[in-house]
Each structure stands twice: as structure tokens, then as C-alpha cells.
Image (tube, rainbow, N blue to C red; front, side, top):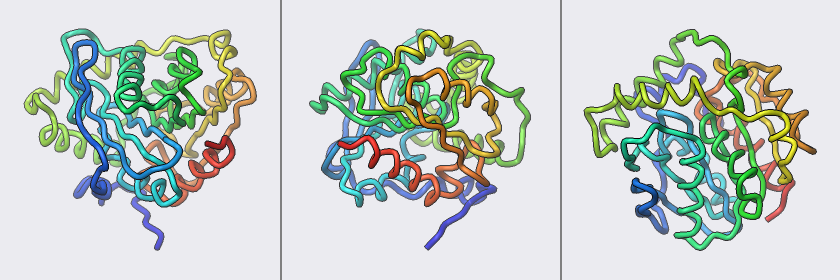
Length: 268
């Protein structure tokens, strides 16, 4: 049965679908933080990296679908997000990319495909540049690789509903539940000033990449997404019609079909 939540009214009230029981979950201590992870199912591994201010539970519609397709799905809460902690250093995408490698080492994963959403997409592409031997391919949804790629922020009811859900989830999951406002300020500073990669950097990427843009993305300029697809060798450009930056929550079946097609194309 199709499930649509274009206005995020269900997500605001209830969050995404509950995650299934994990085969393995825990924390790994890495570089001043304790990083939460969980693993589901078996088969070729795929890591799902959530967006800024969110947490791994936002992938509730994707995990069961990928497990049914014979994948081992790994979730990671970015440092300072969800169940993961942080130290006093400013957020950086490179630091969060190193956290992903620490989880892969903990789980003895030599290589994995990575599905990244928003900030998670940036982290995934940095991994493709910094540690290509560990990355099977990158599904890069809804992010920029330099500050020029973002639209001027305009609040909308959909964004407000998502933000409200993030606030509730932070209070429920974080080890610092009263610090949501400082958390938002710190993450927002990173988003405004990073990442800072140029076409020459992108041209060095040698893993399969899909640049994925929603038709109504509230944050990313279409010409920036197309520039990324041109700059990364052999990258595929994928457009998701009728959805916005929150496509994995709005129309899960449509988003999942694009993910599964990408994974099928790059192989295990």
C-alpha cells in the first residue's frame, strides 16, 4: 500500500515508522565522542546517513525495505545527534566522516554502499574522496558541496513540522536533552560555512555516485546539483518528481525505488 505524507503531518505527530529490532547495536568511542550504531539484516552492507538535526530513526521507511531486498543495513547517529555524543569542538563534516569509518571498523565492514540524505550525503561524498577503498558507491540526496549551492532559507509549514519533530526526538534521545537550541546553532554554523570542495576535488572521485535532487527541494539549487553531476566522473543525475527535501518521509516508495535501482546498478 502506498503511503504519502507530503505535508509531514504524520511525521510531525508520530515520527517515521518505528525501526525493527536490530541484530546488533551499541556505541563506539571515537575521537572525543560515543557514536551510536545499529545493524539490521544480512547481505551486502549499506550504510544510511541521516540529515542535520535528525537521527537514524528518520530512516524508518527505508530499513525494512532494504532488509527485504537482502541487504545488511547499518544506521549511524552523527556525533551530537540522536544517541551519539560530541565534545566541545565545532561540528565538521570531515570529523563525522571519520566517525563512520570507526563504526565500519567496529563492525568489521571492509566496504559498504552509502545512502546519504542532506548532511549525511555530504559525509558520504567526503568518505568517497578520503577513503574510496571503503566505499562501494554513494547515493547523494539533497545536499551541497560548497556554500554557493544552497538556496536562501525560507521557512515553510513543512520545514516547521520537521523541525518540531526534530526537537521532540532530540529531547527523547540525547544525553543533553535540554540543549536543543545550542545544538541547532552549532549545526547551523557548520551548514552555513561548510563544506568547501571545488570541482577539482570532485573530479578525483572514482566510486559510483548518483546525485539525487527532489523537484521541490527547499534548500539545494538545481544548478548546483547538476554541477556536481557534471564534475564527478561518470556520476548519474536522478530527479525525484513531486517531492521535496523530505522525500524519504513524504513518499517512501518512490525514494526507496530510486535507492534500490542505484544499489542494483553498482552491485555488491
